[in-house]
Amino acid sequence: MRLEKHSKAWNEIKTNDSWAIFKIMGEFVNGYEKLSKIGPCVSIFGSARTKPDHKYYKLAEEVAKKIVEHGYGVITGGGPGIMEAGNKGAHIAGGISVGLNIDLPFEQHDNPYIDADKSLDFDYFFVRKVMFVKYSQGFVVMPGGFGTLDELFEAITLIQTNKIEKFPIILVGTDFWSGLLEWVREILLDSFTNISDKDLELVHLVDTPDEVIEILDSFYKEFELSPNF
Image 1 (cartoon, rainbow, N blue to C red):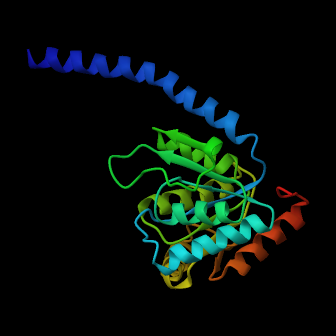
Image 2: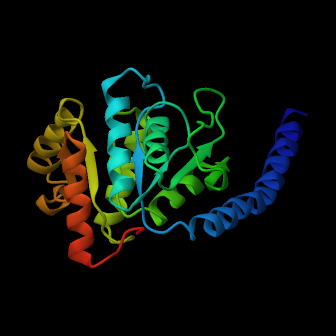
């Protein structure tokens, strides 16, 4: 009897999985249709738990302002914390402010600084990450948690393996990121040779909005691309 119950439950799961394909497809179609019209943008990542009075919230807001002033749009995860700061800076500067929100049982909710027609909701993390990578010409990564690290290393891996075109990945906050980069160099590169010297060239470590803009502008100049002017 127990085996029959398990078998029935498994068959229901497989049926639900098949129908989920259409929901996944719908998220891809909706994302492609909306984001294909926004032009070159820069994604800003970071913790949803960062409070508005924190130095990194304020820094993310200033970075977003600078990005918009130099003709780029801003994409965030659409939630609170660093994501809100990124959208807020873009909104105040009068630029494109996109939010790719994810449905979570805690922490995540839309922030009020996303353009009304540029807010998208996702149930699937992997669909959302595709949108970040496909429609971003640069990643600005502020201090964050597991989700931020996931997005960071996925972008590095895709560029490293030539699955996507190269774009700048900028870590903001020496005091936060330097320990991780030191571990990458000493353990992944020197001790185990699991990566190459060239892989580390994908990542830039900075502390100021001006440094972020310098890297982005150099990238556009090198590859003869145009921002959203």
